Amino acid sequence: MTIRTKLHPLGGGNIGSTPVGQVIFNSRTVGTYTVEIPNTQNYFIDIRGGGGGGAYASVGGVVISNAGGAGGRVYGVIRLTKGTYTVSVGGAGAYVQTFQLNGIAQGGSGGTSSISNIASAYGGGGARCGITFNGYYYVVAVNNAGASGSYYINEGITGLTGVVGGSGLGSQTTGYVYIETR
Picture 1 (cartoon, rainbow, N blue to C red):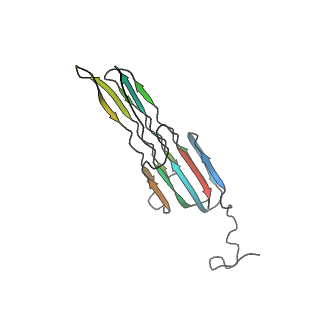
Picture 2: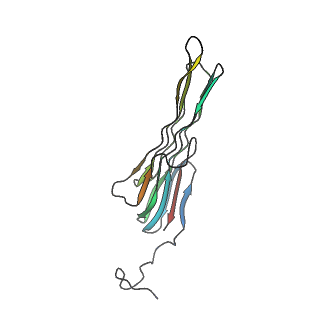
Picture 3: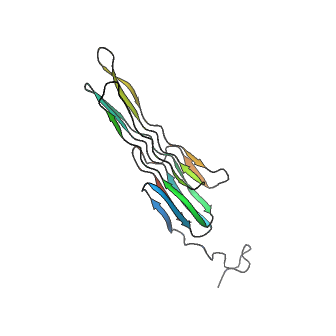
């Protein structure tokens, strides 16, 4: 027995949908994947960019360090069309250190995570640290935390929220992509 509705006068409006709560993709492993979306319906997506790398400098008893920026985040419920999508999971930025006078440690930027051309969460920026000598003593030349990652949502896409550096995936953390039926 099927339920008749205004949109489906003969019933069967839910035929071909995947059950709610089924995980289609869930990974923190860096790489590019081909993902098959089984049916045209609503999906919850959560895309997080990789965290930027931290930096550390130590010279003459002066030690400084700072954290890389958190990756951006895009999440929400969106209607995806049945088909094949390319999913990318961004890597963490490299942690860098220096023990050289006037040396600058520049942490690497986190990688971008995305779902095809729908949305992307960019990685956080790397931290930057360095120590110099002013003729009398060692001083901090530069000590900056990494900038937070931003995001991109394809203009025509509704139902998604983007957060700058709001991913909770901080310094040196791999990105993340999650897709679940709704």
